[in-house]
Length: 410
Image (cartoon, rainbow, N blue to C red):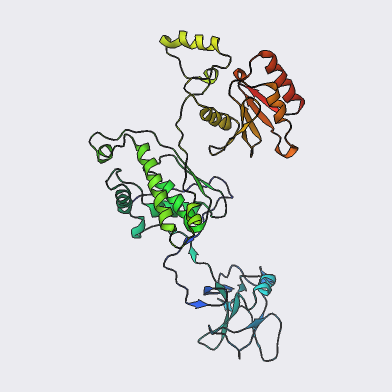
């Protein structure tokens, strides 16, 4: 009846976020918004007048004035007719406030006021406006129930194409705990299954305007013959995950389009790229074992080509490998910059260029060097086969070195 989540802290800077409390309903409001009251006094007697003297000071309360919430104005300086209040004693110990004087002064009569007590006295209270709470150690609500995950996948696909998918709300809560809406955090799922994690990240971003990204990893495990997934035309788990991301993204846009301008709904980022793990695009870089029966053909290809780029690989395949080996993420984007004789691919964010196609000339590289300093490439990857002669290749190498551009020839 139970699943377990283990959270590991990699560095001392890691922390878990608060999560939205759906049951929270503020009963008090002011011009800023809703709040609840929390006593400003620190009830822990370990913190007292003796070891925290800077937190022991008086407030002065106006007993004749109160606001709509029954709270009274306070001051840090005495006024005629105002009551003086120090932190109360507890177990014979002079307790202290939770805030120092400077913070109290900045929040005076905005976030801290006095509240009357039944015994005729007063307490200093803070208007606590946080609607989020710490995650509990047991998640017992229906939204995180595994059955919800199964029902959602069935609703998206019209059939039970995946057994025991994780509930969407549970993954959303995990992402909420470990990532923020104000950054570009990356959520990695090494066993992505039906891609619930991607669904959760897209939906959470749509709700709070975040820019979280996800990386999903999944072996292409075959769907069992005769299963609902196989009957629906899905050969392996990866195909189910990809289709779920498409359908979930479309559903999120459709739901968010209500009350949004058409352009705003269309701008919601629910896109993704799919990569398949493979050997290098270049024979020389491919360290996978070559079967004895193919050894002769492999050596012949190396002799016949300077760089032996595999025939079934596209420029997009090569650029992905170039990006990864240059330390760029999988979502790096290259644009084709057409020069005199050939297209040069440029990743402007990293100032990385690549010349991969045959027919390049030295003047193409010279044209690249005409760019203003702010747009000048810092590194360029050159396929040796792109240039017609070794002399042209030598000139290119000299030209790049002379202009301080790092070159890698493949």
